[in-house]
Image (cartoon, rainbow, N blue to C red):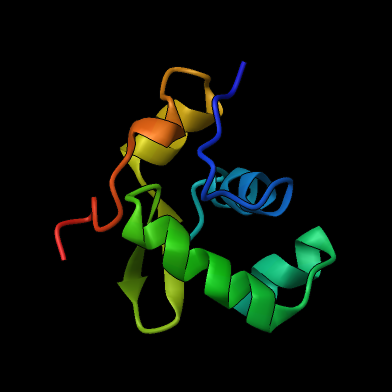
Length: 89
């Protein structure tokens, strides 16, 4: 069972991570189209997911899931225990 943090906006955040969990590097527009959300909202959420270390920006406008993101989806990580800026910035 997944353990979301209070900072998460679900189901949107989980759906973003699930799309990224395909192993592809994707941009906000592609993700938004596939989860039926607006691109600007997905872009904002990607920024938050990146701050908490569940996703990472791999190139300008492209994102991928991190090991922490995969652990969260598998129910092995309690997202409420993550600190903002877990990505090292």
